[in-house]
Image (cartoon, rainbow, N blue to C red; front, side, top):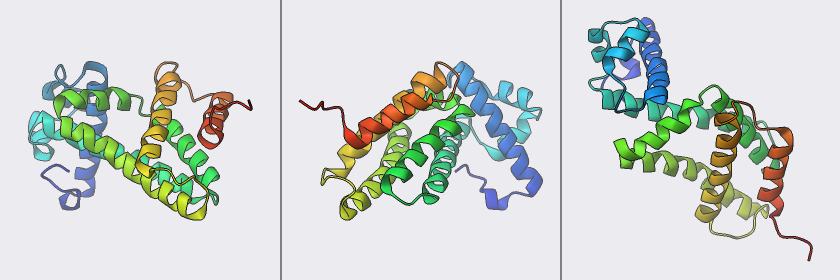
Length: 199
């Protein structure tokens, strides 16, 4: 979170802050962190540079806040979708679908997160560890209820994250389309039944 907390902002201030963040998401995604400039962010947002500095002291500050916000937003979308389901499998399917649907409107997420490994490696690690923590919690519950084999929850978490990351990249990022139903179903088949043949 940037130095100016959201609770200190007026309704208009929060709207301006979110508008600046939305523009930064586009520019960082298009140009990358090192080529993006505060000047371009303010021009495209339609605010003065002084206004930008009221909310974010540096370019790094808004980049950090963008990572935090994107992470929070899609994890919330996933959580809401999963809470509507009952079984472990239904919850996982709903969570993956919610992520793919969310990222359709935030395709720059992939580029921005990958940039963070060069901008701030600790932030990059935080991003993935935060996602992993949610998976681990879900998997631990599934192990307790017998819905998952007694495997190492962290190992399973990163395997499942890889499926979401690269299936999303293959279709949402590269093809600019929602993951096809047959691809989604096959990914879920791998998650819940593995790839081993009958022989």
